[in-house]
Length: 210
Ligand SMILES: *[C@@H]1O[C@H](CO)[C@@H](O)[C@H](O)[C@H]1NC(C)=O
Ligand SMILES: *[C@@H]1O[C@H](CO)[C@@H](O)[C@H](O)[C@H]1NC(C)=O
Ligand SMILES: *[C@@H]1O[C@H](CO)[C@@H](O)[C@H](O)[C@H]1NC(C)=O
Ligand SMILES: *[C@@H]1O[C@H](CO)[C@@H](O)[C@H](O)[C@H]1NC(C)=O
Image (cartoon, rainbow, N blue to C red):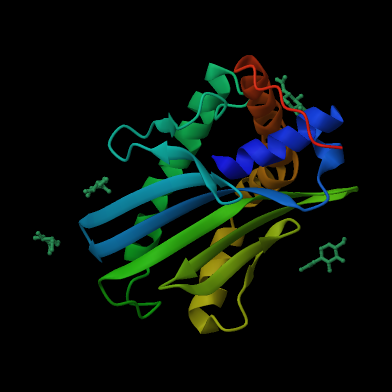
């Protein structure tokens, strides 16, 4: 909590828009870990983070987000939250299936882990940066750049095949681009605004020594 209070304190003191006062980039990222034990058993864990601070958990039975702070929702409407939950859920169901289906072709061995990390970074005075990466057993497999997926240079033929498969979904790629380039930075800004409002509500008035 200390980190966010410090960040928000700076925002309050300067009384500017949150985006304008960050000299250091600040990131929002979503992490999904799939553990595949065999064709019929997969464990899923997901969380979301504002820099080093966890903002969201995820209920792997209901597919619902767990908002860890009063401001974790940012300015998302309930409808937008449901849309995000549904799209996440379909990905979480679809992704292990994709790995099971190409199990022998990609020379995979149970058990294995797949990690997906995506989000965006706000940079002071520069356009935001969006990112999305998928790793297998901790090694980069593919990453999303501009509007399509690219194999990691160290990912071998498995990464190239996975990439080709992902890129068949043109609509999915367009959506992904929008998600990390448009929606994510706006959501990140709204998280900072909501956090600031929350601190103000708590009546934390501070004065810095001059
Ligand atoms: C999958 O793994 C779980 C846990 O090891 C085991 O209980 C289950 O029987 C396995 N299923 C198959 C189809 O092998
Ligand atoms: C859901 O998470 C719990 C621990 O939080 C874990 O024990 C369980 O296996 C997970 N279930 C699935 C389907 O991933
Ligand atoms: C992404 O787009 C930028 C600017 O259009 C370009 O400089 C960069 O090379 C592109 N990256 C890839 C991997 O195509
Ligand atoms: C949410 O906040 C962001 C950043 O302040 C803004 O760009 C966006 O338009 C807001 N969305 C709504 C629905 O108010």
